[in-house]
Image (cartoon, rainbow, N blue to C red; front, side):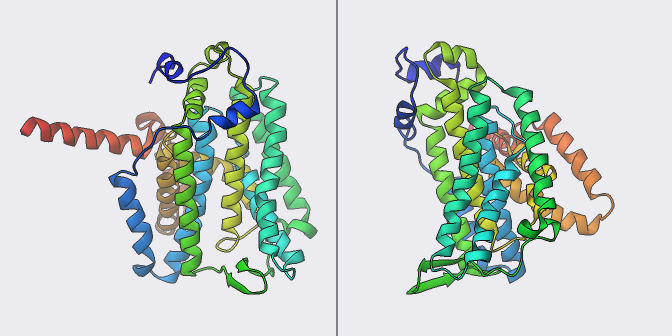
Length: 357
């Protein structure tokens, strides 16, 4: 869809957008159906616990939190064209927000809910500060990537050094598991290998996907894609581009915080999850899956992490070399990722079937 078509579908005035006007467009979008591939994916998620061991279930639970994280980066990079090297920070803040709450106040009824509020609030607050300082000063492109790269390195170093509070590279341990339900009356404990934990993470992934998919099909999402194509032209139509970017960035980082909180019962909370290396991995997941598709990063996170688990055992010394070459191959020959290549293959099959009729 061209910039002109996007603008013709969206009613605007020549006045600057306020936050109120932006919020009115968040969910005024097209209605959509899930499609066959989404139904197939949902069926796989539903039946998976009955087909695998507890270890495999635990792996998938962890990888689904990574899928949510990859989806969150796709909002800001895939649709707005803003590459962030600091997304691991927001994931880490979500994990530490919940884990530290459970460690120091786990005996308080409803401590899990307090931790969840912090897991979303801390990343959102930091994202607002970063986004406001950079978007309203017109910092973007490679400069935004460089600044977030530096911030990621700084906060990662702080997490490593502050051992007494964060546990450093040794991580946090010895805190109670998250408990959901009615405090003091009925609660369910979330632990590794638990089917209920898996279904909760899967349900959150599906819910976030549906909401963000609808959001990106709304007028707001159309404007976001237009900003990626031609920011100056969009601004000439009267849109407040910094506000649109800020709303998207804060939302993206809040979702990253949610994924970080879900990671606590199935992963290991340490300084490694806030490192630049982990941020680079998130970028790889999105690129391999296909950025700007939402569903692609979900698949990309699953595919890359499963390959890493199994291929690193077979090719201990050559895994990173092979993985690096694979990433270069994807960027050069499959720039639209797994989703893009699968769509092209499906289209060719449909065309051949039509020709044969």
